Image (cartoon, rainbow, N blue to C red):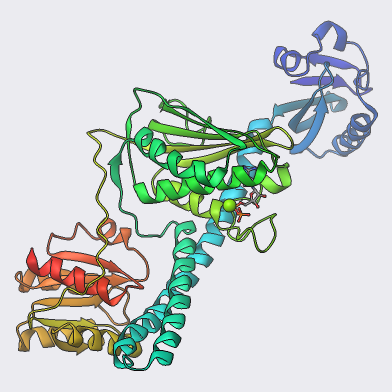
Length: 485
Ligand SMILES: Nc1ncnc2c1ncn2[C@@H]1O[C@H](COP(=O)(O)OP(=O)(O)O)[C@@H](O)[C@H]1O
Ligand SMILES: [Mg+2]
């Protein structure tokens, strides 16, 4: 708080002002307010006083001031004139240190921007997944028909290859939008890092030395191991690109407790226990303008041939979807540190095995009810199921499906989640498990509906989810697993 008389001589300079600016009350009081002020601030002061004289108040105006030691401080200024016996007597001002407030505001704007880009990319990826589902599904069907024609076979193989690359691209966009299907498991991050490092050595070459600084008592964490591995590879690849002449890459793990009193101020995390992974390189570093954009999909400073701009956006989406947080520290020529935080998992680590089946698991004549509103996609699925030796009934919405269920015995209902009409796939799933408890339900969606169980109560064990787009072999396996259970 500060006050001056109507001629601008300081009357009050309280302890908070002394602390904020480094000038003592003795130096300030009695002197003209412009003393010790740089010219630019003196000009501001003139404007403010004019404004206050006219009877206005100033409320929370952002400005920059200089401290005694020459450093600058971001402030918000409020002020008003005061009067004695109806006469103007002076001015009173309150300056708030706005450094933290401004930082928070900038972070909020940034978060909102990422949210908007996420919604856009997520929506697009979802629609593309449906289209790719039709393309991939039909190419899987047409391949065997063209068996004797080698030219046609290779054409189909090329088309399938491109469609699968398209699916990979949408997968990365979904990853950024925090909507990729994840298979979280309780994992030991140290073990995973040790494994990945063996892989990395080849990518990084001999000019880059990798140093591991792993906490021996590291907590376990809950995350998708394949995605965490991919994230570390992305970060290491970026470090390699930033180290054309070689250098050092350090990976550090630590336990990190965010106390309940922290309110996310330190690292942008909710209070709780986290495992932190730091990936530091001694490379080219980044300036603040680049840092502002690195997590956006398609942002790259590299050649078209070298960079896709999807590496960090994938890491960003994955870490956030896993309930964690990512931050970066970097300066040109000084190197870069990425910090990943993942929630602690209480319990023992068990790395989930990744089944890799290529052959089709055939049906045994069981009846599958296919519920899908997209005609082309439904036709594709019906053909796939018929080839897999299932009997197939079709419906293009939930109420038609319910009628079919009354009329025929159905072993599995295979339904899209998002459908027009009153009931969607989840409503249908609930209705089926209530009325026909022996009938299994396989849900499918272009979004991995982590929301599925969250929003409307847990689905019971006879309900499973298959994410779009899927190969015929994925569908075959999912059905066998359900029917065997
Ligand atoms: N370790 C790093 N050092 C310097 N710059 C980096 C580093 N990691 C990322 N960047 C910057 O962030 C950009 C985006 O990274 P990324 O999303 O992985 O896309 P890409 O690697 O395809 O360019 C890079 O083009 C680069 O400018
Ligand atoms: Mg990259």
